[in-house]
Length: 160
Image 1 (cartoon, rainbow, N blue to C red):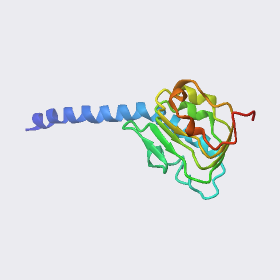
Image 2 (cartoon, rainbow, N blue to C red):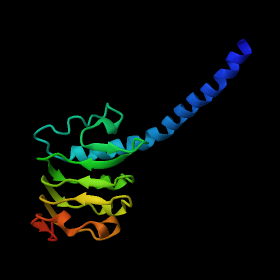
Image 3 (cartoon, rainbow, N blue to C red):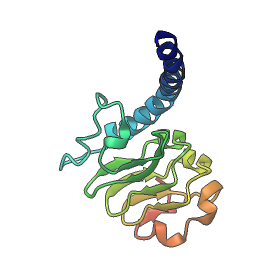
Image 4 (cartoon, helix red, strand yellow):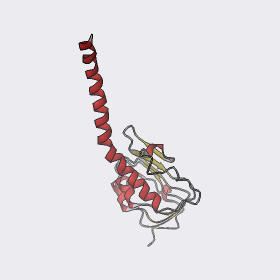
């Protein structure tokens, strides 16, 4: 009976080892996403504490409010709450799995970071009703973002 028990543990140990190895390989990637989100948060004024759940001690950003992730725990959606102000972090351009970015109805300022044009998976974004300035991006995913997604930014298209 003992040889059978040892033999039956081998497939289980392979599964456990594979799971641990894949987790360790994904950890640096998820950590990068956390760093990007914390860079965004650090530059914003959040008077209502809406981003309080964005805690670096919680190593899974998928548990944070306003964030959605894929099966690999990579950030795919950011839907910012209301009443935030400040600039968008250029580091957002490092979220290579980002598909959806909604920052509308806030008080964001400064330019829309040029780094966002490299987000090849970005298919939906809404920058409306803020105070962005500078050029409206037209390259990369912005070729397909409708103009209404930039509406009601009185300084957009003007020098910052």
